Amino acid sequence: MSLTPPATPAEMRTGTRPLVVKITCGEEALERLNQGLTVASTALATGADVSVWLTGDATWIAVAGRAEQLTLPHGAPLHELRDSLLEGGTVTVCGQCAARRDLGPDDLLEGAAIRGAAAYVEEILRPDAQAIVY
Image (cartoon, rainbow, N blue to C red):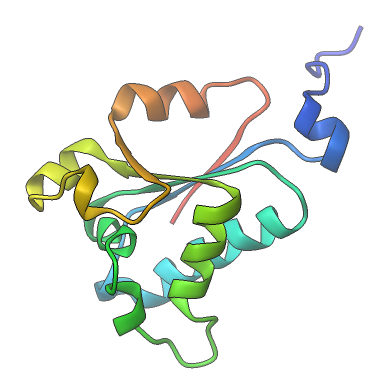
């Protein structure tokens, strides 16, 4: 008897589980921010279903012009990574984090949404999900 859950449509397509990447840092930890976006973008490029959650100062990445101001030597441009995720994945800004920064849905780039902790918990508790935090 196998304890492995049956493959989801995404797994059948890519052989991978859906990936949920939570990024908790912004400009103060630029390498971690870049790494989280790089891993998420790379997974997306392989065909995986990817959901990115932006919390803390990472929320600013979902605001037009903010990622364009940040550069990391030898790192992919943050705005390019973000844009690929907005186009092919799911990008969510933490509701409390947005409120603390006076950000509403109209402040975010098209494709980014504001959702709360219950939605995050629902995503990471799926039996087939892989969640990582940066």
